[in-house]
Length: 392
Ligand code: GDP
Ligand code: MN
Image (cartoon, rainbow, N blue to C red; front, top):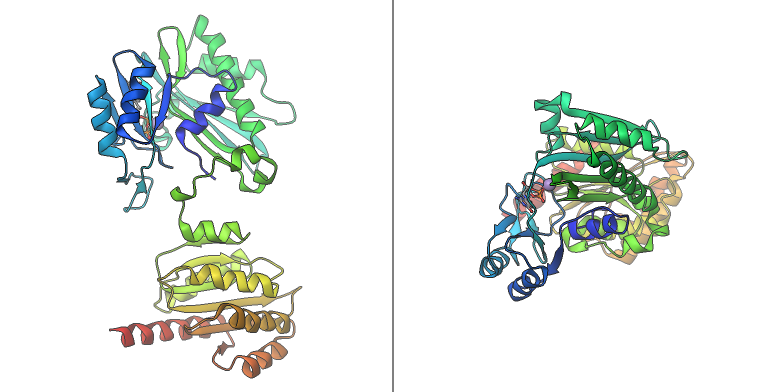
């Protein structure tokens, strides 16, 4: 789960990290009022969307007076901003953050990520901030310093000092860098973050200031972080994915018309490939998981049907621990409860497969029952082409 920059900055502030003075606004008048509250004679107006690379897309505007601030807010609010990191439609700007400008000496990069294979927190820093980490890695790889922190031990002062030296900092800035790094580590760990990025972290006179911040959180830990769940802004998410994740389903929205309900991520990937080979385009990736109870099957149908583009549904279940006859009953129940008007292809395999197919033939005769995955994919694509031809 992603949060907005201003929300991430509040978390950083609670752990002693230095930030520019700033305030949130929902209207141009409020933006101008915020600027006068903050004071000074330079402000930056920043679009709050769940994406980086806003600067290059026109989402970060430098202003010299309150009139400029009001005009910048008017330009951004209510518009969609597309960046290199969003899809072409972009994301709606419904709030903006106004900050005092800060004189920039040097721009640094600081990132914390979860290294799942090492089961550690990986810290990546660079003396060449301001550009994306991928670009830093390509253009100035030697500027990158890394550290790995064992969460059992926590981040040690010597690790923070090593990073500070690696960034070429000296004098009083070393101590400030250590405070910043340890503070960020605590924010990352205490809130179950999966990513924390400060880019740029700037040297301003003899201070280190976080000019920008991006954070993501581990959704599996949200149940114990109510204060983080509260920061969720569903308007920034794909509504299809929000609907599914609210119901505990693993779902990724795609651009095609064939809706998929599958158990197991590997089988789901294989099914998407088979649909493509058969000449179709999947509308989603949906893994209903191991159990595939009638309730979960019904929820999955609802999630897939919530996408208006879906014209055909393909269900592909391999029953290992599960049983095909139970899954078939689940499909029948889902059809009764949800009401599926569009073509439905079901391929069952594994335990009690014949019983499962018999149930479908008897209780849901309009379902196309396929024996193999290839057959199922081809039947789905055929049904989709027929629907498309009828519509035209
Ligand atoms: P991003 O493009 O989404 O990563 O947004 P950032 O918050 O990083 O802003 C983009 C760029 O705007 C930064 O890299 C800075 O160069 C510039 N910028 C942001 N805030 C200030 C500021 O207070 N003063 C100055 N001079 N530049 C700023
Ligand atoms: Mn940035």
